Every structure is written in C-alpha cells, then in structure tokens.
Image 1 (cartoon, rainbow, N blue to C red):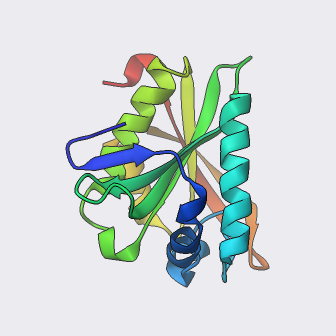
Image 2: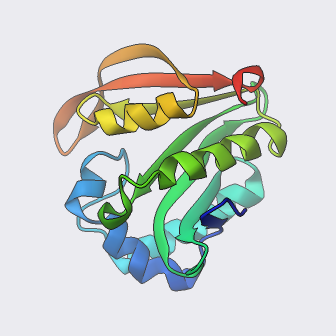
Length: 176
C-alpha cells in the first residue's frame, strides 16, 4: 500500500537484521507487548515467517513502514493482529524508529491500515491498546478517530512489572 509519503509492504527475510536493530532498541521494546530486548536477527527472521503464516491464514496483516523514496529500508511496523473472522474484529499495533518519530508517519500508516482492515479484510471493529505510561500512542489513536473505551488495571506484564493498559476502538461506520 502507498500513502502520500510511505510504502506499507510485507516483511521479507532480508529485513531481519534491520528489524532486529530498530525494534530491539530499548525505547521500542519497552512499550510493546511482545518485542524483546535485545532482539536478535534470528528471532526477527522467525517473526517474519510467523507474520507471513498469519497473513496466509487470514489472522494477521503485518506491514513494514518505509519511506516512498527508500521502500526497502523500513522505519517501523504497523499491523492488524488477532483477526477474528466470526466477530469481524482485529487489533491494531505499531512501532516506529526513534529517528522517524514525531513526523506523523504512524498516523499516516494507521489510516491506510484502518482502510485495509475495514475495506479489504472486511472488519467491523478495530481495537488497540497502549500502556498508560506511553501517552504518545494514545495521541496517535485519537488522531485516527479511535475512542478510548477502557482502562485495564495491571493487565499486561512487561519485564516483570504489571502495566495498566488503555483500550481504544473504532467501528467501520466511524472511520472516515
């Protein structure tokens, strides 16, 4: 998928070293549910294979975020996971390299992925969660038109510490 400034493309095995380096930074790994720190290229390659299997099974859609002028050099990731065909819903997730943060790339990519989720994957509802100590993620979700639906106390454990999560969602008819 192309946006004004970005290319959202499938991950390929050649992305593994850069995926590991960018996603495995402490800053990125610290506020994501499942990215380890450190994150090895071997683990990144296993994850890329998992991304492709989930896409083929229709339960996930993982996209490398790249700038249009450098479509092979990823700067982040955006995804729909836990796609539930029966209830027509999925969960949005993302991370962006620190050098690319604050430029609106996640919001731009998010609009494209919401469009994909509603118009290609046929979803009715898309949710997202973020740790309360990561308010920047909440600002992205608000810009995407998502509504905060709840506060889950100590719902996730990251590196031995229980974290509160804020839950957001958007329905197909709310997406513009």
